Image (cartoon, rainbow, N blue to C red; front, side, top):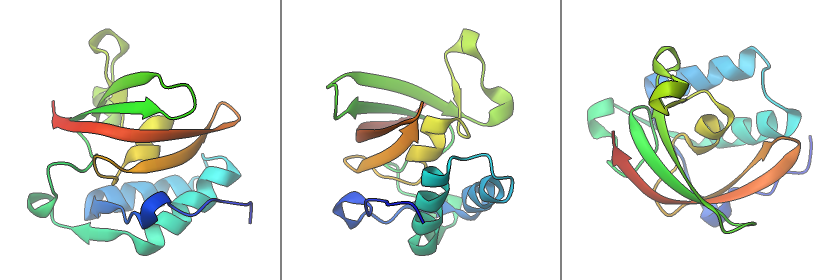
Length: 132
C-alpha cells in the first residue's frame, strides 16, 4: 500500500447509497491512480451511508456548486458538479466522476483533503457547498 496521510481532521465522508455504489464501481474499473485507489478504499471503509433526503446540505454530492481553496497555492476554484451525462464544458460543469469530483464527494464544507492529480498530491479545503 502506498503511503497515505490519513483523512485530515478524521473526517468521515457521508454518501447516499447511490454515490457509494458509484465510487465502488470506480474502484472495480481501476481508473484511479494507486494513491487515489488506496485513499478511496480507506474512505469508503468508514463512510456513513444515508438516504438522499437525510444528506446534510453542506455535503459535496451531485448537483452542488463547490468552492475550494488549494492549500499549496492559495488559489480558490469553483466547480459545478453534475451527473457524468450532464457535464458540459460550455455550461462550465464538471462530472462528479472527474478527479476533483471523486476527491470531494462526501466531504462537508470546511473539510480538508488530499488527492493525487496530474502526478502531484494536491491539498484542498472545501470553503463552500451550495445547491446549483
